[in-house]
Image (cartoon, rainbow, N blue to C red; front, top):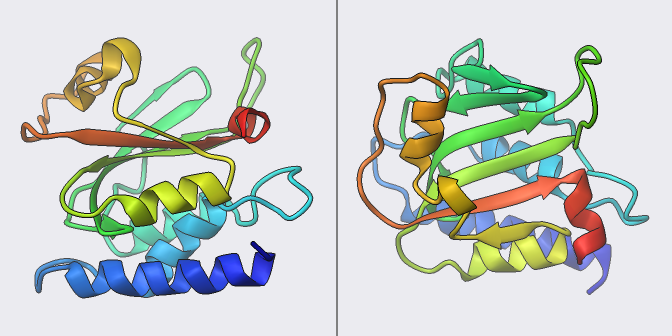
Length: 177
């Protein structure tokens, strides 16, 4: 698929996910687009299209995530989604950003991962993962339940029971595809 075609498909998928959102949901298309660009694969496969920090700052500006991460472990910031927001038609619950602010030891794996509560058609999410060198999984080993991640961070917040998926678009995922 040509790069331009991928972005046309992306725009259509985002429009579909916005149409599925309820009235109390933040449906600013630029939020989803910014996050998708930050997770999107460059044509030369050397990294991601957009800036993960700017994508998260847009969610901060809308009050969807806190201005500071809910937790940080090693090189990864964890942002719990405070208000309903969707990504490719799935409820967004957690955004992880891995980056090196200062060197604390080996090894940083730049990029984003999002956790979504699955409901309905997952094919737009699957297509995005395939087209952008990302891994989509419903299991993260001992962290298959995102509440385990929240506990690890020392947070009291709990997510509802359900089936969750993890879209990992960190740098190391590029070579796996």
